[in-house]
Image (tube, rainbow, N blue to C red; front, side, top):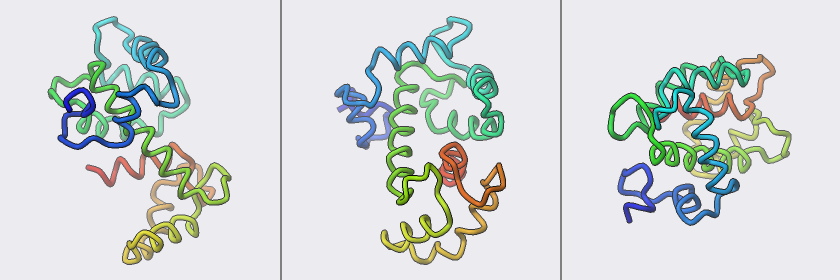
Length: 162
């Protein structure tokens, strides 16, 4: 069980299952290469600063506040860095969030609008949350187009997990 439960929370998620059994959308070698490219100082771990620098270089500087929430969730040994196993737990969760984003994005536009999010919430028994949708989108819509792109969606879900 411990090999499948990558983040050590006692629950094996679909993303962890996929990573452990190498059914990820990316082969394990690609994840290892990504980990090594993020580990700029070669320490065998990814620091908060390395992750923030990567986001800034990828044009996602607006997500830097989200990094602290991610580190809190995935740094299971509380050393302030992600080792490879913790990184895989993080990747497994990102894959799950991508699948959820794609499920909510009914029209496959690559964006989630208020109507799509409201429909998803109603269909999944969360009608009481529908009145908050427009406020959520306004809060996390960084480019002001009234919709959530994937990285805006990640900021939204990270804020809700804390």
